[in-house]
Image (tube, rainbow, N blue to C red):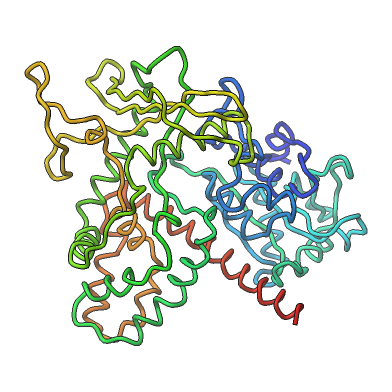
Length: 476
């Protein structure tokens, strides 16, 4: 029962009838003290169901619930480490070992996805955390998040395994269990994958299915040709799938004059990752391809546009609004400034936007790393003011562009992508270029994070394809 006390202190009732997956994650993430990266209410950083929307729109979850793979994707996206197992690919003995491990630990928690009907309960598919294990009786304690229906209850482990080892009719796949733990390193990333844009499915299918076929069916003489083949036919703008993360906060008591220590550390980390990425051969190949093929960045790639979008999303989150359509974004009296950190010279560029949410006007500040002084990252146009060389604030900000998104995506593709390249020397060279072992530590963590996300996204992609096929067969 070691894990019980952490879980029961954050145990709550699901806010919607179909929110069992989201509420289960909220209970577990808060029990693990995972930092959501933003405030919930007042000064408190605390997970709420409304924050878990990176893999599926909340309106869809409210209407249809959420699948096993999407829950595991959400946990990973929220900053936790996840080991997910489908019952038909596992065993009762393995499941029992995970139940014992998690019940005996305060920093490992188990989530189960099961069919209520087999337990003679009302409803069908359900998620809940496991709160304890009785070894002598071989029973597990289910902390049912639908507390309006059932209190916590003990279930024989063999019966719990049976309800896990059932098929989810929505996906045609087995249910299962997942162990969720807190990452050793605090959550701070520059890049993330997003499933909010509906075009992610086409991107996912192209990268996982079509690219390996293209590489297998063509003869290559250089690695440049390989890269050009991969990115020459992307079905959508890469920014619809790979996002860069902007830190935003409500403006309080006028313009920011100083950023805190934690914020400074995150800004420095993001700046360092971007510098490391821009020194890779992967980025050099992407840059060459874009220049030779006159590939232009999207018209909406400007920093001002990206910041305005981030401020709008942040404003909706701070107001507790689940509907992005209620947010009206407009630039009015937008202020930009360099700010110091702990007495040091300007560490960040702050860009503020005035946003209208549910009829209430709000000013949101966005923090962007300041451009490093080293020449290898490029620079903006220089202005003279009071005898000091300065650049315009937008040019002074250090932020990712399309080429960075393409480069980090290239590095995060699974190694199996390149296995079918016919020429062994080309295969060896591209494998060296994208090898995570050769990357600097910070960039390596970033790429591994995206690789883990891609794994869960690919499972969601496969499930949704199977679901669509099943619907077509049903209609026919």
